[in-house]
Length: 326
Image 1 (tube, helix red, strand yellow):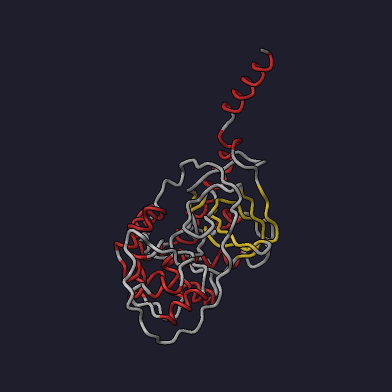
Image 2 (image 1 turned 180 degrees about the vertical axis):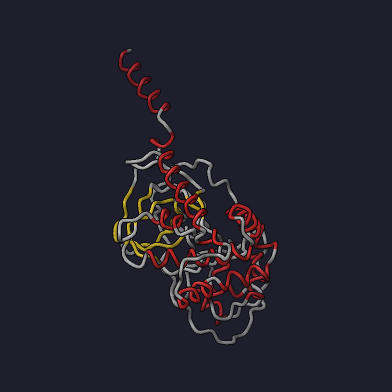
């Protein structure tokens, strides 16, 4: 009877634990490097650590979007930042450059693998990022006016979520009063080197083009995955078993014969990261040379990433979109 009672009390204790204590323990990834990827922005980016690649999303902060892939998201941010949509997009690219500059040297990522609902292979996880100078990236973004205090919350080993929220809120209010970054009315007073700003604009050009071509199709597809309540709790996640590899350079494309094979049905979409050459050439507008280039350029973060493959134009992507996975 005493053994049964002890087991019952133990089970009751586990049930009564706060949700945060049931999640995975914090893991510190030292010596991280930012990985080049067209989807990187101010608060979400690809990271390389010991030969593996991950995608992390910052806790507590929300940087402006960099493209109109999700128009409703940009509209919501425009209201929150008291700016126009054009200013939001411009500031988003400024935030992306700001983050890239602060992460030029090795940095530390602290995560417990909470699901951040990303669309990349291997998923995306929430994290705190500490620069090589020991500064919190989220705080730096807020102080420079490149983000707002909004998003998923978490308590660390040394601070409660409420304490951290107050700190981030104070930084946002100070940036607002100072009129820096997006709060300056012209998408930012923080200086950004022209070469890096150009690079950031070019890295997102493919997504901007895709947005204008595909319109509501891509909007609805991506909004269903990305427009979630940022402050809703999410359960702990295990360390991903197979993180995405760094993209390989695409093979040079040449005009080749187009396959006459019937395209796959919309109900049986193919995975562009695992599809065979035959399956790829069955897609409208994809010839043998382009299929080979797609295979050589794997893996892809999503279907929009196909735009970096020679031979795949926005028009081509619009045609094959119904037949490939996100």
